[in-house]
Image (cartoon, rainbow, N blue to C red; front, side, top):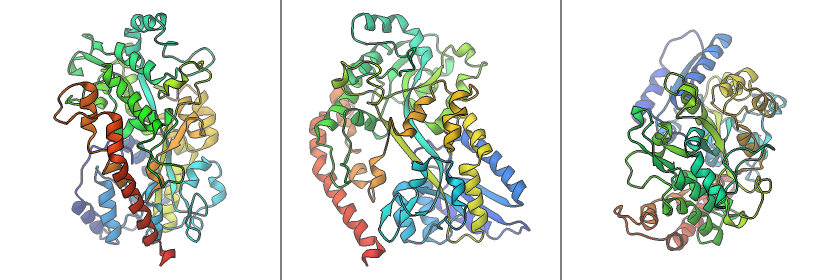
Length: 492
């Protein structure tokens, strides 16, 4: 779904491990758990699982897969060799239920104990088979997290460029400094304002640590597959309509959002399409001011921010959250009036129990502990793994206790509350081929057009590109709709 994964395991090897795990002799029940996770997350979850093993007299075979997690999981499910507990992605709920691969949790867990977690996150895993309706009915997984992806900012770079930013304000190019005001309002910028801010945040900095790999600092280095949607949402648009049957690539709002995204490139505030160093590595090295961040990423950025040995006094890396930009149509609005105009993605992935598990109740108990136990949620949230799944904790101590990180974590909470969060359009369609096979392949040409540089692709404007892919995308979405109908057992 959403993570940068650094470990690799071929599908054949993964299946072999599952086979051999069943042959191990043990007096204790054995649960196999398969997930993907970044290194800092693995440390947290191994601690939690160690405690679960002790308290429940069980052995947990905790496996962290690589970037082939989904193909490997598909292979194990097809071969009837599924782990006891595995991730259930939102787009996969129907087909996993239709295939009888995920165990209903209603009879394995006290449902009243789930009232404390985000209702919207739990509803993501409800499905009524009889009416073919998502969001209601039987619960098929418990949320690992209710995640959000906001923009983030390295405040150390802002401070280095404070005089230049103040000049933009004096000249009327920026309406306010990029920080939360005295009333708690977030610095929400329009597309053009943000592009101009990124332009002055692109400069050479000779004070960076040696491992930074150079002296150039960039305002940002975003990429469409992860970062364009907030711009389209900020223009009042989306990729598909509310019925999830019509592609909107050729809509005025899509044009505006995508052109706002590329304006950063056009004005010289972004890393280039041919840069060998990714935006993520630039951000980690203090070479990018603005970057996206998921709730699951915070721990990695927290470690750098607070490490006095490499970052004394937060001199080159001072991490915080920030809102995504919004349409230039909102330029005349005050900072207060802009607060509910921006949006970032909210998402989730869930712990499902295999119908093949020989220890379903034990597996469901582990899923519950990972999802809804108060001590576990506090342990993970304090280490930057997620926002607490427990609403009272998220709205209370998570915001009020300075032990939690970062300073502007209210950004995440506001997204999960619904003020600034939207679900990915791909989670509403049977597959995402209408997007991956049409939108993604030709992006190099769009960058070539706005960079005015040769990157090996024929240059093409946003509007020309969007118009070109509209019909093929709609055709693939139509096919997905028909495929879902044909596979639904209720239609057979």
